[in-house]
Image (tube, rainbow, N blue to C red; front, side):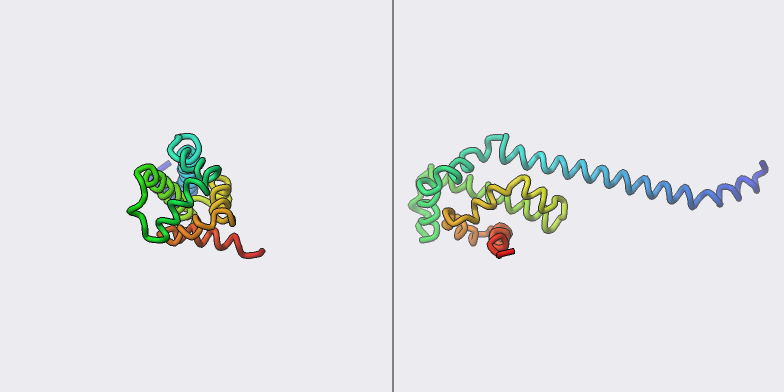
Length: 161
């Protein structure tokens, strides 16, 4: 083959090679994105359920809400934060961390589109429903202190379908 024929063949094949390269790049990007999302979901699951970091607050919200959490939230609502003891402040900090994690997951879903509503439900449905139930009304009121996404999420669950 002479140089002219090789040049013609390369010009003819160039669009096909470019298309294949672009297709391969998109496919690789999508696979990498799925892996990234799976890692993120695992990290959230580990933080909430396996690390022990939120064990105490999950227990308090689930089993000791009236005895441990409500008195703290009442003092906050009445502007008497200064009356909180060291143990109550520590529990309030854990509650804020837990609610911030839920807010972050809602941010990842709503703004970044990194996880789906189905993913969020799989990770946090129980806790979001707990915040929204009537027994936890004091917690629901507390959402006004900077947890707008969670408040909106809980409110949307109240609407009849």
